[in-house]
Length: 130
Image (tube, rainbow, N blue to C red):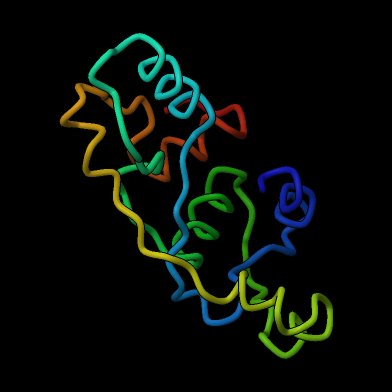
């Protein structure tokens, strides 16, 4: 996902999709890899696990955090009608709605996130350490 939005955000042309109120499940790649390694090591790691960060954010909150990490504005909202034309309504719906997903089992399995919040994750992704 970051690869697709990096350039527009770097140019100050980024912003939320549609209303921006839709939930955006996310996880830093380092945390995802750590979860996979934990699953391979622990024998009691069974069943489905939601590999998402503990902080639930909206698309607008993500856009704000990513723009802040890049030190750029994110003034432009992509209106839903434009998405419908660009991606066809069936695909646009994937961008304008989102599931609210929680990672309840991971703490029970002893997992600790390195990037539990969107701000620290975005700062690391753009190469800025807190």
